Length: 627
Image 1 (cartoon, rainbow, N blue to C red):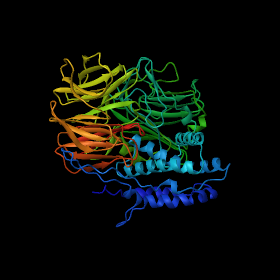
Image 2 (tube, rainbow, N blue to C red):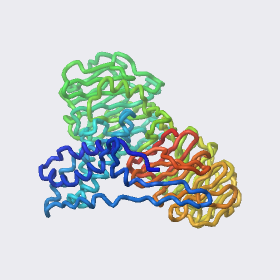
Image 3 (cartoon, rainbow, N blue to C red):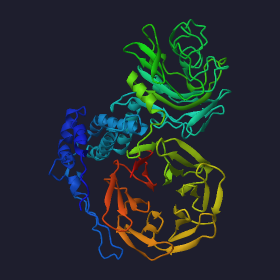
Image 4 (cartoon, one colour):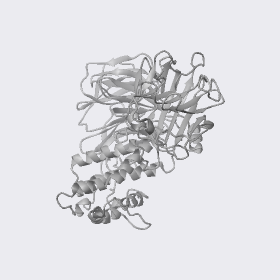
């Protein structure tokens, strides 16, 4: 049975590659390659594309091993057909001519990671961007780009992205969700938490007594003519909070600032007192342009607040919960860029030392390089700080992750460990993306599993720990081990790989015992009845618990990076183009495509009762889809 066709891949990439890349000579250089690229990407009814031909045949192998699966056969036709090279000395010019494609691809991937775009079309855009990115890697080599030039091209693309070049249609430049400290999931301009600010369950807590967030975005602000700033905040009380700041972007001496306060003091002739106000001034106060609401800011409830700055219409607008509540009454002259490069960009702190610190919490803060429309802000408010994601929709659960070393899932959540000397054990809701740090300061956690009551993980390859899935005390179950690899559980026992053995012990702890001595080459999985593991050469082996005879189950490949079973199907992650997740009935039968994921890497796989989740390091994101 042939692998499924891959509709829609071609025309997206082909249309991009056919755009003017800025230089007539570069068009000639790429002409020969384009013909090959177009051939790779053409999909029409009744026609079989080279991409389809390079797919491979696979069959389930009976337990007796009597039928082996054919090895995948890749087409020898590829970029080696396209031998056109540039004349010496031309590479820099032609390398730079590809910058628009690179910027577009990177911006689209950034938009997708931010979950800012609607689900419909978002995955097509992502596939477009990642395929273009992969194709550019080959084309950049063909036109003679050195690794240093490619690196500079990427840096230029990121710089352009931060400057507000919205080549993919999204203007989102920075996004802070406070699920992992001050991570910026769009542009890596990570914030620092100051004065006792802490993050809990996806919120930064500001105590009103010195806590604030420092954002390294003054360079971005200096580039913006148009902007939108939006936040989800909970203001604890109005008492003692006159002139407290939601944000204050300033020059350090209170001469030039952009300020949003939930409660203005009214001394500078504003239209209302004790209500929210946005101001931009240069100088203070005579040069102030303000938008002051007539209604008070909500207290004790999560509230969406946004400011838009439109340099064309020359108006600034203030929104609360998706509704415009104020705008400047005279044409504005000031923009963020007109203030120059400021010294500080703060959440919760004022540049004026007599003003109080903000008391409450912030769940999300975003910076856009455009003035969003009223409809867009209404939609953003309705979506909330973490858009609720439909179980059957392939979606980002959480982004901004870089060190994910293992994953597990249950009905409602995905769990993972971040491997470093101060590693973390974390969980996130599969429906909302809301994340929680279960344990921090852990020593190189490298594998994780769950039985929906406890989460179990490995540290330094030597020790197994557990704790309740909602947090609590940590218990050491086994120590003094060596080289633990994979870790899984069926709810009664823990199983793990160690050297050339598979060991097990009760989930309550006990003495580890060797279950199998075997060559191991990859992932391990378990369900209510069987263990599954991979041996050198890519074969997946199946054995009845506990300790039943092992037999060949399915011929995979060395590109398999994850297997997981829900008791009905074994899911198999292929970390090789076209990056499929397959499903194979545990009783042994014909494999089927669970779904084709984006064109990137899959390094961890987890399966819960309702959804499949995986980690893509090229996006820095954990993704999921309903079965």
